[in-house]
Image (cartoon, rainbow over all chains, first blue to last red; front, side, top):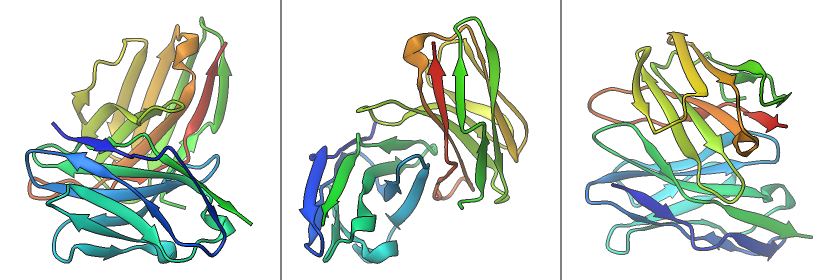
Length: 113
Length: 115
């Protein structure tokens, strides 16, 4: 079985500062990894995903994440955050067989002016 | 706009009511999902439909009843719910095949309040 741990439930950061949101997973098989963002009163929107290939994945809105197999991590980073990045961020893992996604509990990012 | 729509966006119902949530995807996908999102808890997968056939039912109480009449529409029928069923219910869709998994695209959700 797969599981996802998001180590920080809340992350406050000042505008234009860098941010890292941490995600660790456990799985006995190869996995696919995803980051989603949820703005208030909206559904989840895909930020980026890792399926194979380069371990550094670039997504929308200037976010990127790096897959580290030895540390079973998939941390999300952005070099300079904006007020509009304030949202809930979810890490998810999926593995074959089956098409179930396993989500973390989310990290609430608050960007302070 | 993700190509997945959900109605209604907000729903308040009593414990004796019967209501239905609707989801429609315009992406040509062959798999659809219902999730429950409660505060401070991971998203809980409730039901999965592949090619209109239910393939997952993660120990969901029978007061929740899914229906998938075609690959574009998914319903969640609700009856005799409990206050602890109050949550955001999210629908998602994806294109699945035996060799790969693909991104799940989510609707905006239905905020359900059970009184």
